[in-house]
Length: 187
Image 1 (tube, rainbow, N blue to C red):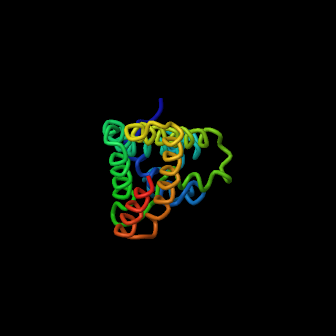
Image 2: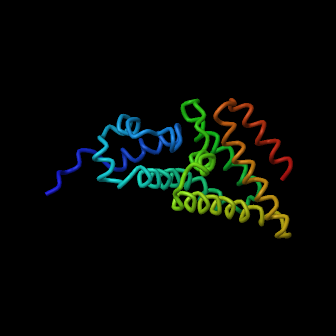
């Protein structure tokens, strides 16, 4: 008979997400994960199967965190560019929580994709990127009739949010807000 868990899986998963978010997949050693999650390696493997399994669940946890911003963007799509701009500002608030810039777990993972040999992780990243791009296109369609223009602007904004993600690690909010305003002068 298996021993009952002495931890809440959702809580340790959230802690793991933060470790991966700050240190990346490669930088998140099992020892660091054990320490931050407050459980041993055996429990990690028993609950998540492997470091890859834990990472995938952590990405899902992060996507749920950002999901509320994406849903807000989709519900405000009729506001066009203003809805997307709000998403950018909300993202900065999330990434700068505690005044420390973490960037974006998805963007950080993209930087490690060459090192990761996990097709599931790659597909999860691409799926999330398609979801964000789709939300951008939905909002842009409220302002532009030309779908080629909508696609170009959605691509521009997608690359811009990735740049913003990297910038949150170093720059202060005032600099990031200036960047957002400049981005939207070109949309």
